[in-house]
Length: 103
Image (cartoon, rainbow, N blue to C red):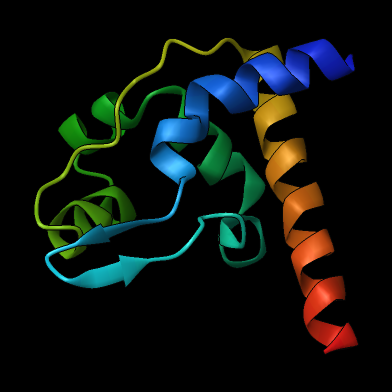
């Protein structure tokens, strides 16, 4: 998988993953999600969050409720783009953990 594909996928996802404040609460980067969710579930959720919510996936419903009914957008990513994005998040997560250990 090429660097260009990884960067394009990450760019499309960036709006969902950047830090922001919601209702006065800081929302951190979602990069650590690869450590707390199974990759197969995460890949499907990134690819078709709307369908998982419509099907009543328990975790998708819990996330929907937790984030005050803010829907994760379906970005129309194909399998290769989803894999590139998850690899990018895994790499960012490892880098963040390494930085934390250096402090």
